[in-house]
View 1 (cartoon, rainbow, N blue to C red):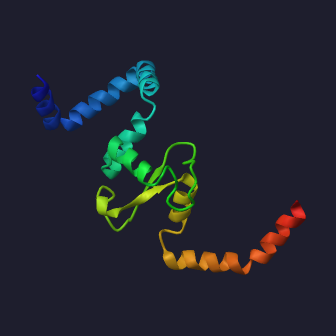
View 2 (view 1 turned 90 degrees about the vertical axis):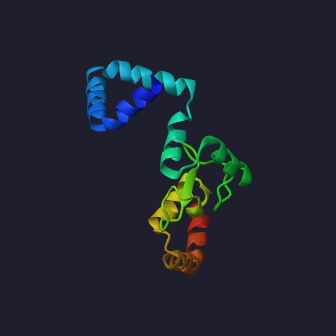
View 3 (view 1 turned 180 degrees about the vertical axis):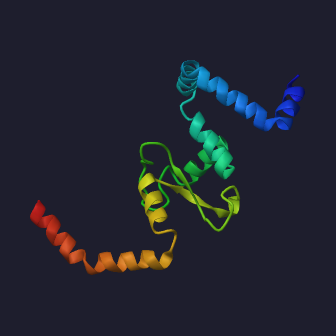
Length: 146
């Protein structure tokens, strides 16, 4: 029966997706309850699914990466990933699912920072030069605020 269902769904993807969407809309309360129960049973299920579909990394591979990095951000060495979980940093020149493009796990702040700089090393160096040139003013302002 399982193989038949797989073939049926594969041959009628759009039809099945539309039927599912209609059911979920008509039964929003049941769908919300189902999602709540699934989250209570396994809070990491959603992020694990996203990592697998987006980066090709399953739970065991992800946990191994955390161990390799000693549970720390690859950039700032923080042990706190942020409000959710570690972000998989990847080189945008590669397909995100290509393990060759995976660079490491980052906390939310470092991931946002790299994203803001669009992985441009020249711009990052300019930012370092800027901070270095203004370090005296920054330290002075911090001392007067204290």
